[in-house]
Each structure stands twice: as C-alpha cells, then as structure tokens.
Length: 505
Image (cartoon, rainbow, N blue to C red; front, side, top):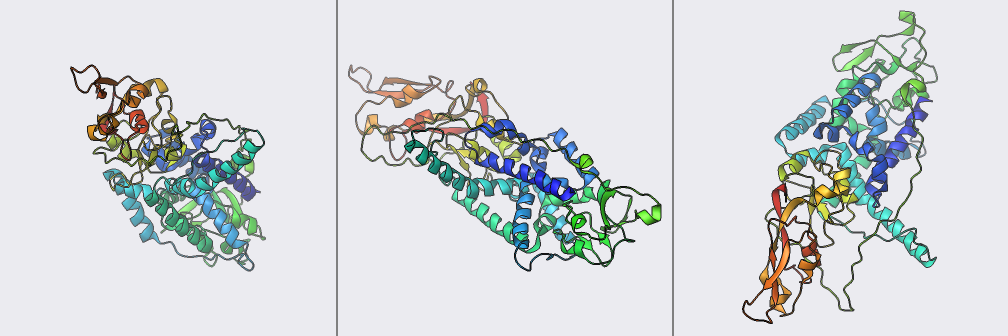
C-alpha cells in the first residue's frame, strides 16, 4: 500500500512539474508554480528558509521522500527503470553494490565550492531540477507544442478557436545538445542500474543521503523473520540492501517501498527505529523479537496526505500577429553583438543573475514573447538572455519574474516593470532606412511605450528635411520595441545595449 501511495503522489508531482515547462498559456504557473519553489537547490539559492527547513525535516522524519516523490529527475529515472524491468526476464534484476563514496563526495565538494565561488556552469549542470528542466523544455516542449498546433489546425477547420498555434523553435542549439546528452546518460543509467545516477553523481542525493542516516522512520529488516531469499535486494533500485549481511545503506535508500512490497516473509517494515552508526552503513538493531515491541508498520495516514487534483482550465492568450503588409519576402533579422547582455526585468543585475540562476529554462519556456534564449557565453552559460529578433519585452508582461524559483528574477508588477531600465537603445545611422533609402520612417518613435524616442530634423534649416530618431536616455527602459519593429534588415538600425545593473527611470 505504501508503494502505491508513493507512486501516485510521485506521478502527480511529476506530471504537474513537467507541465510547468510545457504550458505556454501561463495558466498552470498560477496554480502550481510552487512546485518549482520546493526543489532543494532553487530553495537554497533563493534563501527560502521555510522550504529548506521543511525538506530537511521531511528527510529527518521519513528518509529521502524528496528523491522519490518531489524530484522530477528522480521520478523520470523511476519511469525508465520500470519500463526496463517490464521486459521479459528482466524483473528482479538488481543486486547489492557498495557505495562509491569517494566519487559522491568529490562531486558534492565540487558542487558546493562552485556555489560559493559563483561558478554557475557547474551548478547548472549538476542540479537535478535544472537538468530535468532542460530536458523538458528542449525535448518534450517542442513535441507538446506541435501537438497543440495540430489540434489548432483541426479546430480552425471546425470553426473553433479553443486552440491557437504557437511558434516552435530551438532556442539554443548548445543547450539543446547538453539536454540531449543529459537525457541519454540518465536514461541509460536508469535503464541498466536504476537510481545509480542519484546515488553516485547527484549532489542533492548525497546531501539528503547524509541526513537520511538520521531519519526516524525507515525500512527495517527484521533479522528474525528474514529467510534470506533476497527478493528485497533484487528489487532495490538503489542497490543498497546487502542481504548477506542483512544491512541497509540508508544513505542511498530513496524510500521507494519496493523492498517492503516484495518481501513475502514480512521481514521488511517501514517503522520508527533506533539505529547505530557503523562506518558508512547503518545496521538496524531495532528487532521486534529482541526489544519486545509489537509496533505496526507505518500507515499511509502518517506518511502522506494526498491533495485532490484541481481542474485545469485552459485560457487563450492574445498573441501578436507578425505581418509584412505585402507579398514581398522579408529577410530575417540577425542578432546584434551586444557589449553587455540583456537580462530579464527583475533580475536586478548581471551579478545577481549569474549567482542565482541554475539555467533550468523555466523562464525561457514561459516567455510568451519569444525573447528569452539560453546564453552561449561561458560565464553565464545556459542562463537566459534577451534578444529582440522575434518579439519585444512587453511592459505589461511579467511571466519570467513570476515563475523563477531561485530568486535570479525577483517577482515584479507590471507597473514597476514599466519603470525599470534594463538597457538603452542605440541608433546606428548607417543602417537606418532614412539614410540608406531616403524615405521617412517613424516606427521606433511610434511604438516606443515610454516616449523615449523623438524625431528631429536630419538637415536643420530645410523645410522638407527627413526626420531621424533621437533617444532620451532618461526615459528608455530597453524594452526592445524599437529594435524589433525596425524595418531595417538584416540588422536593425536601432538596438538595445544591456545595463550591468537595472535602475528605475
């Protein structure tokens, strides 16, 4: 029963967490955005003490339930391992193996040192939540959106607008490649050896493994009842049950309850125990026959309280239409070389973004304007950067600030966003159609939401002088409307340079 409850809870957590990376309407983030905030590394980076304390207490009470119920990468591995185990002749396929302690602690030390020194690349690659986020946003999201577009195509022909098409594009080929490699490695390890990734590479697994050694409730092997059949060990995906020595390595146990369900002798119970430390393996000494206690196994009521699924509604968000006004083919815009990268409003500064972002790609997936993409620069590798070839940062949109779980992008309101300057527009006179084609254009001035662009005579003293844009540095917020809507190709005649630190206008 305990295993079934865990599987149901894990399935709900996994589905909803995955949908956070797939949903482009923004509806689910309002209901289930907290699922991203209860992940351990994002909570540490955001200094979310309530979540950190809650996860520590959860582990000290019940063991590594975080790894088996909350962590999406861990649940994803369970799914792969389950499929592998259903093959003919592949059940009961695990066996005990000794812990690779030296590797676990080297990786953990490297991870902690990288967090202290602000080496975001290492943190991003090793954080399990960020790793799964990149997999979901790069591998699953395109398939999800193609499916949505197919439904929109059929709905349109039935005179229904319940669905609308959305753009599908690879937002960063290097990040896509890393996500693909991560997916392959994790899938192969899970297919062959269950949770070996969690107990050898994952720093979160190592941290919680240390804490789980002191947990109050855990699987207990009653040596008096154990007949040595090994069913528990052969079904332990963490390979942490040594049936010969009748020991359980609790630092690697992910509390999946497989061993309890498979034990036909009733020797495995999930219960409160007293333990003593013996090197790295904890030997259970709470034996019912020795102590005289007749305790019942831990009931589902004491383990989890499942929350009923809430109805998920789908709303249609207004989308910007891109039209060229004619039949002529328009050349795609090219990304300008910015001296200072643009980062989302609410990020406060480049330093804050670099030190807090785990590159999980949740903000990139949630951006409705298609202006966020992963950085290819080593210092900010895979962290979000803004570019305006496909849209601009609409003053009323605050999606990225609402979904970030790490504090890299702090929550802001639409009113506050309209007064935050993330960059400054720069005019390149040689690119402007006013100079190159001798035609009047006022796109940048007309679409600037803050009135930071005015037109002035190019040739003062001539009554028929063409007018060129003049930028007021005190009013520009760097939203990119001017850059995106500039008709010049392939490079816009006006582009936005980022601010190292954002400020109010």
